[in-house]
Length: 135
Image (cartoon, rainbow, N blue to C red; front, side, top):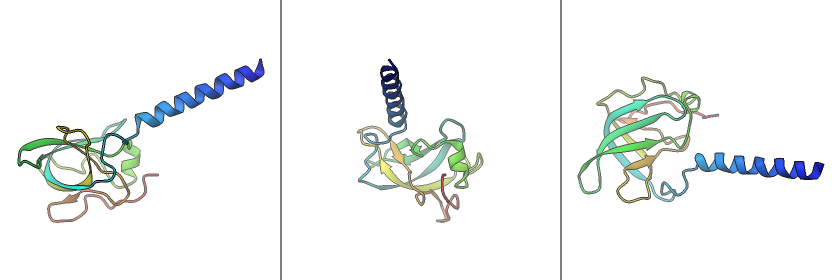
């Protein structure tokens, strides 16, 4: 009977962990083998849990102005704070440049900024934050 309980709890733990990993995975959503540069105007910056988000207005490959969702790869507020981000990091209307991986699905305008040195820059080329470790 103890072996059955142990097996049950082990399988339950594996299932719960796999769901948590899948929830925060960016695989399949963004091209991890491609990068792009995106220059646009800050439309919205919400520095909230569970995941802060940034929206910028920028032109697509056809010259059409679109709203782009900028993803930090599932990072929480505390992770971004450790890199220098705050609720006032971005100003509405500010021009920034982002480097990251584009969304895979056609018609979806999103970019993933993941990695310690992959931070946006201001119009004058200066970094938005100093950077550092998320952990």
